[in-house]
Image 1: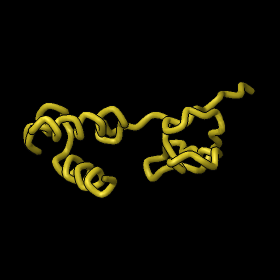
Image 2 (image 1 turned 180 degrees about the horizontal axis):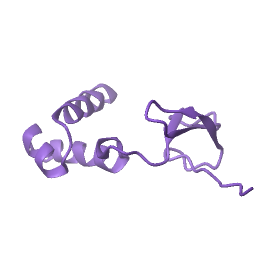
Image 3 (image 1 turned 90 degrees about the vertical axis):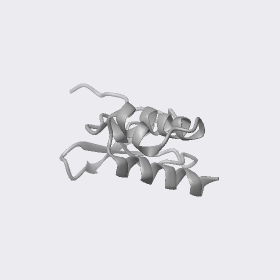
Image 4 (image 1 turned 45 degrees about the vertical axis):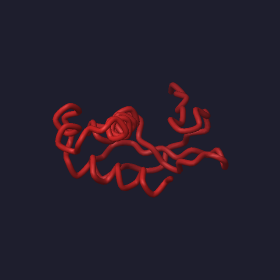
Length: 93
């Protein structure tokens, strides 16, 4: 049996433990760090719109004046994903 260290993408801590499966059957993990802003995560997302890098690109493109359709075309994701991410980022400020 090989013990593999799971790093949390938010806090980069090594306290990730198994926490069930997602609706698609992918392994879900939970970060045990009490100060981590993220509770659960999946190591390999199948949909590109869930990647943290793409979420950051959505915010960057919005700041630079790109519209929703332009963002969808460039990143190859759903318009609903772009709209929801922009709503989330607006509430965080």
